[in-house]
Length: 609
Image 1 (cartoon, one colour):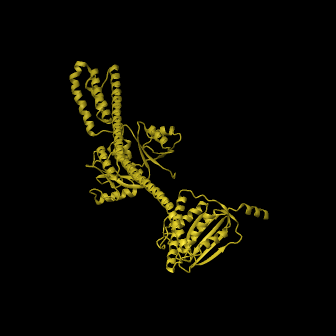
Image 2: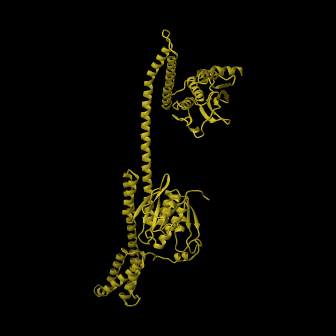
Image 3: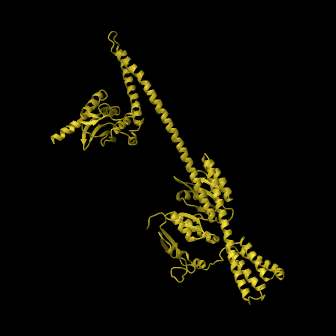
């Protein structure tokens, strides 16, 4: 097994296959899609040249060919088939793999086909009738211009017929006109005999010229037909792309695509998206659509799945997968042609790209609007926070002065009110400070200023400042002895640890035990704040450090910024913070900071060692 991407390639020749051959080709290509191949259709007058061109373009290294039926002088190659021989003789960079055909009546029938393939019975009868009419006219013309000039009339007839019929009937016209001219007009008449060398050469040259002219004329006609089909397909795709790119809504894309495809195919076209109601949809149509969405392959007439349906559905895919199907209805029992299948596949792919483009455009607009809204809200919040600092300071100052009045002592009630005002102003000041700090973190303005710090002293200072908050809790402190002096931002680390202690006080009941520990592990300092409270809701655990997030069971008050500030302050110093639930109940928060030993302490250690 090569375990690589593979391509099913069809090289369309100038002479197209007959109806049965095209139907068989469509089934084979659909089977290749089912097996995971990427189907490519190209046009070329030479199969070998087309194969090599596509191989170079797609960087193909292995070429798998069916070994032709029959045997010739070389056991591997059939008589008259030069395709495999040419590929083997000039296969630089390609590894050729030949696969033998399965024996059967179909192989024998294909072996007997020759150059006369192509054309309907009606065309052959038309050729015979035209040659008969020209022969009747030639009986009147030959006595006047002579038998040799009559050959030019037949030659003109062959050229004109080749413009309107396929290759097989054109070859029949060439051969039939030569025989009729020899039998009826070339002496001796009414006999297939030629007595003079001049007449023999003339007959031979006529036969060759008639065959060549008929072949060339048929080839030019086929090329013109193919070029016209390619131009029509390119124009249809261009119009579909232009109209779908100008649409600004899903319904508009579908309406414009249906209109353009209907004009291109001259058949009823409908576009169905997954999750929407198909117009006039039956149970079979719903089943086909579900199968297409699941498998991402065509279904219906001309495909391997649901071949009995009166319509053909091609999948619409985009970056998120198969999102719907394009349905092409056929009024009669005629199967779709290969050209129709290729155009339908290209159109469905273009519709998927247009829908994907619209979705991405809408997401981009939403993201841009969200970014602008966040920028404006941040600017407003920052401005309001700065403006609040002045009145908050005035309230705190006034409340403190009133509490310290000596001349007119306050009553118990008044003193209680003033203390509540002072406490509320302090809490409001902390909230405004948190908002400003969060803005600093988001703007990247938080730059750590590292100084020599004693981590144990930092822990004791945080406990002293939060003593009032933790007064009703049982606080147990564990600090590893002989911790080194460390280079850290004292203010940021102090604020982060104090926020964790305040969070433990806010989320635990009175009498709950709170454990604070500090230890060194390898090259890191580990600050831990653990409690024996209710713990963190498992659904909220991944979001506890998100900005403005509050758990469902969080107590009233607070803005959900404390833990996000902890995360920002610690990560600014190159550390990390984690949250988890304790096995015995409660929550545990751990701050991990890299140890950067102070220079004097490091020198002392080096001297003692």
